[in-house]
Image 1 (cartoon, rainbow, N blue to C red):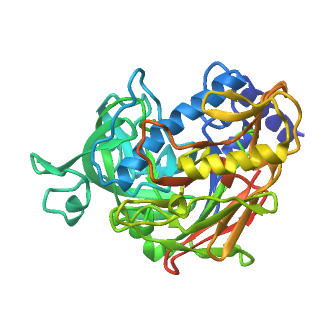
Image 2: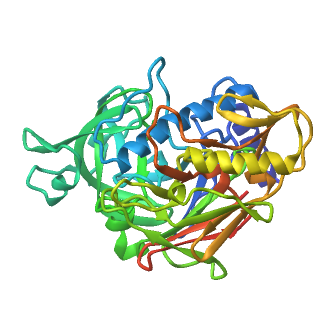
Length: 429
């Protein structure tokens, strides 16, 4: 009886504070819960609920900035142009819980498959959010010196006194910090002497507020630093942003990964070896393969052209010739004359529709997307849009991005040692 009363009191207090009791669920083994930034468990959700239209346009604006960022990466540029006219916020969509230092301090870090390094806002940081990692309270924290081998692996390293200082752009922001080391605990796995950036200054609004966990393939990524533990293998299942009360999962290491899963080969762009390129060879709308110019899908390491899987972009973007061909085939199958637009979505309907499936055809693997991965609906149900778009006009993009809405409710497995990526349908929520 006492236990029941305690649980009810705890539930009452949690609800009164606006907390979801599910958020206190602990991570187990090598599996972390993944929350959408608009989840009830996220402190980053808007304080005032956005209307459906505001929500969609906000996500599109973030995607625009991320596409600029990704396009600059494959082009080998170090500086990212800021879109004119207004400040665009660009921040990854999914967060995981990490414990940093001794004793541990919990941070909700954004997971990003298109970045390598981890970085965390530290005490004294100018421009960072109010939640920072207090280095003075950790007995295992130390700053790396200029002569450390890792100092050569960060962008634009300089010597600030004897500390290794780095400067880089992320989205439309710039960040500066000291290269540091401390224990990082993911789920129940301690990783001692993990190298990360301890942020001292940020400008702009693109920086994830409590830090970033890089899941790319570079030397400072989680895969490289914890290679002994996770064998450069991980998978995730992303919850739908329509399910704010649920979490997905990030599963680290080969243990517990799905056996029944189809794979496609991972390709490497020498300019940007961190990004997860795959060979997209065709797209089907319904049962018919769309006529797309081969150049629009071709992998070209010298230009950075090709297709990547990315956890931080929300809506799949295709280079213009590919998108126009897919969109037109979709419209023909829907057979509704009155097509309208909403922001960057140019294929919207104000009457109920029956949508065909869309299949991404990769070498060795087809991924067929049902309506829930293809359509966005207004709250009132009055507008339905195809949730894909062409690469932004102001980005000279050669990149097709398979984005997180199209990945939701799929297990996406990154098997780097065997240079392959697998996808299997799974109910993440």
